[in-house]
Image (tube, rainbow, N blue to C red; front, side):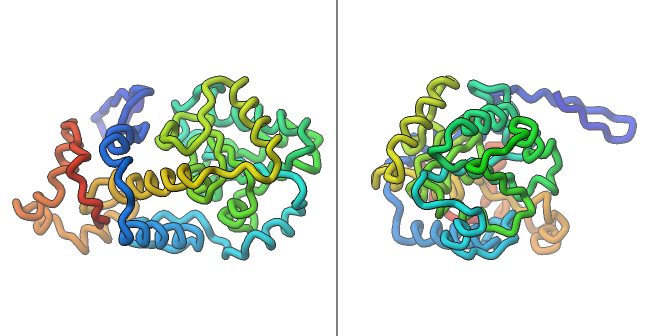
Length: 314
């Protein structure tokens, strides 16, 4: 339960752990549109978005920026971290501990922090692989218990083959993706992006892209470890199939461009949006038609994903 207080008024909002809104339930969207190949225009839009995310610049309606370091490529990343080219590189990308995108997503651990602790302990005894823990770059801004402290507490004597990349490190996350042979994710979007790059990703949390056909989705901790063991045993040649990469790209487009319904104002830059799209202009009958699907969704009405047009809206 979350309690909001406004002066003398108090409003309590109950949030179910399995809330479809908080869980980003894309099952209906994927069922309706997952079999539809991307058009050339859609593929181009997705490629431009991926480039923008890697370079840390804004693109269209996507204004969140986490990457602050210039991309220098895989070779530079490998040299920066001292990684060799003979053992598989396993890239674990964290969520921010306590962030809403990771709360209530546990499957076989007690949460993101517990997953991180248990995973690094497992890899301490696996010198045949190189584990890179990339702490979420937004952790200093969003708060929460520092992931680096979780790792240090779990492994007081850090083995050489376990490397922690702190949030402020001068390295681009997508350069690490280029180096990685295997990906580990809780719910982070980077897990989806690794699959888009052909990297097998083992998903440990209830994220929206789980079970869509391009990730490994263990149901128990034992299955999780067995999946990692199997991938490591394949050495450097354990990438996804072309069909799985196609599915990942198709899903990414549906998620980034169709799942997010249009709305005239954004919390992060609300007053700038109001200046650009004033209330009186957006509350006309004609203007509201543009946001009818969004308003219906906010009222709890079911969304008909079959009629999506795939437009990027501001």
